[in-house]
Image (spheres, rainbow, N blue to C red):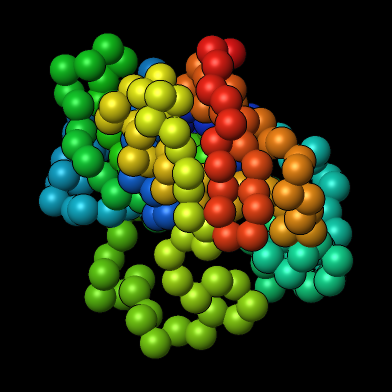
Length: 222
């Protein structure tokens, strides 16, 4: 298999990326390689509101996997079988994400370009395939979620001082607050005085967490 496209967004490092798709409304672009910039291949795709992205964990060393992993949501100290998790350290480093399709841009450079939101991929991640999301077949509201979170609701309240928030482009402010509310930290780190920093859209965002409140302490240009 080989990539048909790559994603472009503001997540330039693994730390801080939403742990699952659909947790934020942050936008991304899907830009196809020249071989697949064929308008006919996209005919009818605009009739769907969501699509599946099948992609490759590009930052995971090839051939390295483990039968058990430590899920972050279990504190990082309890092992579960790799097939009961979405760990990138798999026999085949393949990811699957459902994202919202905002529009298909046929006028952009290197068109067609897909505008999507809710992606949990790092900038530059290779896309192997795209398929439409079918609500009647792909949605199981009664499904049991195991040890994973049972809701999209963020676990933290976010204190983002307005003077710092204003440094982020307005159209991305709501999305970055949503991403922070999901708690980017490893679950086993609880030091209220520790300051964490992650890259987002040309900025370095620093924050700390005390109890259930995340406080942004600094934003600066990367």
